[in-house]
Image (cartoon, rainbow, N blue to C red; front, side, top):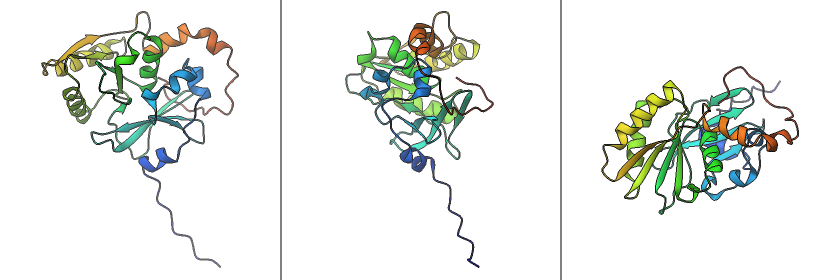
Length: 222
């Protein structure tokens, strides 16, 4: 009789994200209206991946770029990495960026980027993954402080009561810094930017092959 094998500790969020596949496309994200050119944009290199179940993973990092967790998205499901802590999903920062666009999910940030061709070359993105904690607001303030002079913080959060309240808190934070302006940009006629994108890209979505083996779990999809 063989002795029992030692139990292997579960991987950390950083290890789990590092082990995930970094594809050039993702059927689930295509079904949300996101095109391959958006997913492959250099602004988002290394910020998302796909696990063995086909879940889309959006990595959260702290000030020093340390992985703290990741958003998990799939059909009918929104979650966060087990054992992880929400910090911020952030696009690749460039020295010539002049706008920081804040959304409530990484998918909304990608949607905003795809919808706004005129501003994407000068914008970086940050996702809160839902209602921010006090620690996240502290991280946001440090991110605002590091923005180049004459930058604008864009509150592109949801167009609902909670989103408007969050936009007000972001505005109050931005107003503390003299080199940063503030703008509220809510999606017209839609709850969030992915809702709007799916309307714009309805023909693209319609011609996609059906999702196979999609994970189905209870919980809101955002």
